[in-house]
Length: 447
Image (cartoon, rainbow, N blue to C red; front, side):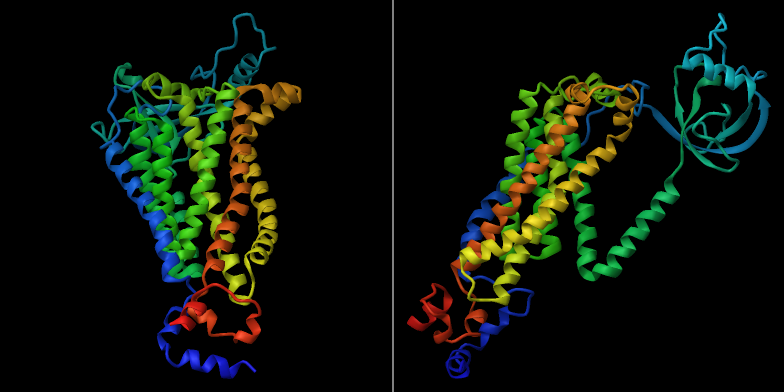
């Protein structure tokens, strides 16, 4: 029944099939122009923002010698000897003999055990080849082995014998090996798409380390920097991984709208809850070194950037789902597409929100343990700024994710319903189409 009507349309327009080799038929040229008219100015604004706010590197400062703000060199453990803790004076028992405090008990335990005396050789910097001694107590969380690589901190103003100390172990090889396994797995499974994903990941880190972080340190508004940087990451990652197409452009629009909503909600509730963003030693050190940085703005920037990765996943999945639904049934209208897409999205919402909440809870697990040890009430825990920050971060990001599903589904349904690709039009006859459908087929019949 359908072969007579379709053959006349296919024969005069053989080029209509040239667009149907991809995973989904493209929209018409007119709609592509409309999408481009929206995204090209946005991309141009992102490029202008990058050029205007480009920092040219992080500003220099005099090292404080505190926390991560220390000069470090590489080292190697050349020898480890067992010694009596009493002989090396590893810990001092309180003069009163009081062991009721944790410090007193630790001191007694340390003096009763066997310590290790590690000889460390500096393997980088101006003092390469110099050695120093590090005492490791038996209950120390980090033990050293002969031949192990370490990171040593250098304090130039300290006495010569105390200038170097072990601050961490060298994890370079296992971290590099794990990164190599990850890259290999991505390429083996994803093939060319996996290669593009790795390139996009490298580009995202480049934007983060070369633009976002230095620009914030230079004193630029963290919110503006985060919006521009996140937009650049979004454009690079989505188009590199999924190609320059209308389908990807719809995902970009959905991500952009959801990011704007996340930013507005985050700004509102950070101000309303009086969150300062200065809650631990690291943020305190940043504020001390760069007092002009807006720490609450830095918190909001972190929420936006943290939400971006999961938003990309949601918007791309929803857009692809709507495109595939239309490919499976070209007669589906706007409402039918939206309803079918939103049903898929509901399942996605449940899994993604749970993933986000558990990710934040896992990161804050030591903090939650401290509150549990203190037997604090739920109200006390949630009212503390440390936990309140994580709650706001989680809930604001989750609201952005939830909103991304209907927004992106609606945009995708509008785009694929507004015009019919030529390849889809050739698959059905006028008799099957029922009521008149606006789209490419109608226009071709008028020509």
